[in-house]
Image (cartoon, rainbow, N blue to C red; front, side, top):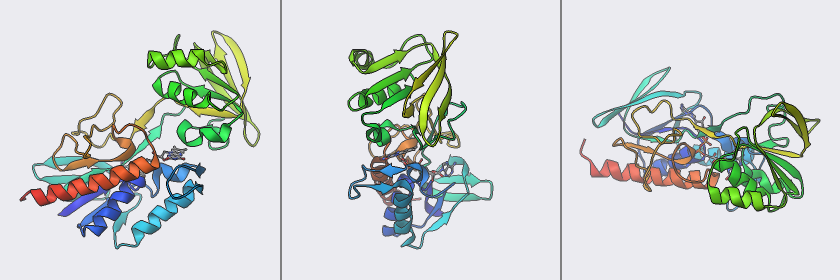
Length: 301
Ligand SMILES: Cc1cc2nc3c(=O)[nH]c(=O)nc-3n(C[C@H](O)[C@H](O)[C@H](O)COP(=O)(O)OP(=O)(O)OC[C@H]3O[C@@H](n4cnc5c(N)ncnc54)[C@H](O)[C@@H]3O)c2cc1C
């Protein structure tokens, strides 16, 4: 019987693990990989204390910090289910079933992909899924934002401040999302919206050079140096069937990372916490661990 099982070893899970080690909890980390999405970022410029660090280096430093402690980490052991039976929670993987008093779900998210030719080849070579992270790299360049909901609007409104031109390619007849954000985008002189337009491919050589699309039967090609895919996020939360989620599948947490199931806490991108960033996920992981620790102290099992 563990005190705690942490699911995931991205910024949220690793930070939770460091806190759990320092609280001398009996715990285990079950994860698919180490570093999570943080390792996919080319350059990270917004993690306090590092003006510039590659995502891979930051993930390595997170791992080094975690490995200073004698922590049991089962890599490549994804969780398949979490079932609470009173004060006993059973976490199952393909290899084993583990019993624990508390769980922190820190399994992150993945971006919904376009599924068009060129997407995989140009990932991190002009094509990105995070405007907050990578937008400034495209200052004074022409870029396309794919999508028409709030994430796409948010990305486009960030980019119009410093990019030369921002094309928004939306496959619906009109933009969705907040009306004020729509108005702001339509007022921006360097933004152009293509409705009823479906991206057909990403082209380039070493880096992105163009995006192709089909709009009401006609083919179009836009010369751009950057493509921001903003068509939604898919939280890795399917294995947590009993836990309350919003319509996007994000685990609903309060400000102490408590979920709808007693003893089950969640942190980082898999949750409803607004803004998906490394520093936020790390802070959420720390909070979730402290809440789990308090929960253990407050219960007689
Ligand atoms: C390309 C890219 C660039 C980015 N750049 C930046 C940046 O510059 N600055 C910034 O602040 N943020 C950036 N982000 C966002 C940032 O990476 C995320 O907000 C952050 O990594 C979220 O941390 P997390 O721990 O919540 O989840 P994740 O990093 O997604 O980690 C989730 C962990 O859970 C594991 N996992 C998943 N499913 C299971 C399962 N079933 N069982 C067990 N383990 C599982 C994964 O293997 C992984 O270890 C970027 C994101 C992307 C995609």
